[in-house]
Length: 345
Image 1 (cartoon, helix red, strand yellow):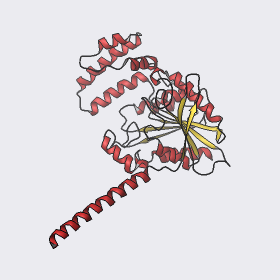
Image 2: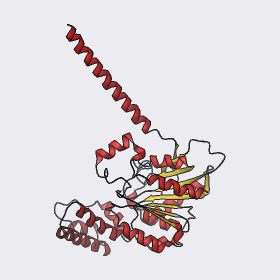
Image 3: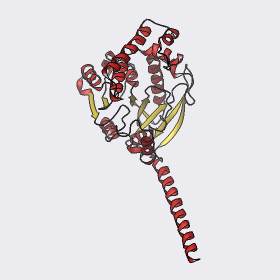
Image 4: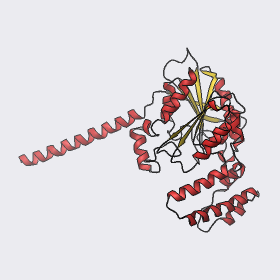
């Protein structure tokens, strides 16, 4: 009887420990996802339809001094205002140094009307201008301190925007220069990383160049699908139309539009973008040269994630749950913080 009671006691103790661990873990995760900032839903009404998004402000009193603002411009894909919560650690860092953040749902995502796949790069520039105009009307925002942060495909949007708006600064993360060249670089580097032979890589590049020839000749979607290899899933008609509108994108000449400080952030292990070509072109075209600051992070891939966790859903998931402020590569947010703090001096 004594042994039976002892066994039951051990079971209850084990159960209690499990409950405490489970509860403690849950509370820790909740605390990690509690960001020191205030988020306000916004709506911007435009001729192309309503845009929805989030304006993030510091929790401290902002009535005495107006805030600088960072407008977020997304990369490729169906991205919501928070980028599936991924922007929030950076928003919090920006709020800590006195900056507001404005990020919009892409068209057709969240409450934004329209379809982002219908947009050209120029359409996205117009949309960014509409966001800037809206921000300038907000009483807590200093209209002379509005700048932009943008990743990847935003590298074709922001330089054009700089020619139309007096941006206070521009932060560009992993931007490419030329759309078609970037596609080939991505194919070559990703296939090499995956262990394909040089013959396999060249065969794939040749095949993709044939697709590019269809684009260059204003080919139809039907011509494209007829060219698609058996067993290969073709891109959708909407995606084909999107690529058809934008495949000529090249940022080279637009880089000359920058008239305020530019922070270029690159990852050494980026297989999407040729960072050497990007850095070389920025250094050649951004003038005067003192406007440009370049930082390349080691062991970092395209999305500013450490290479050690990039590509692993479970590793990224665990990092985001337990340490969301450390999900990006070490020093990334610090570099942005230093850059913007210097702008405020």
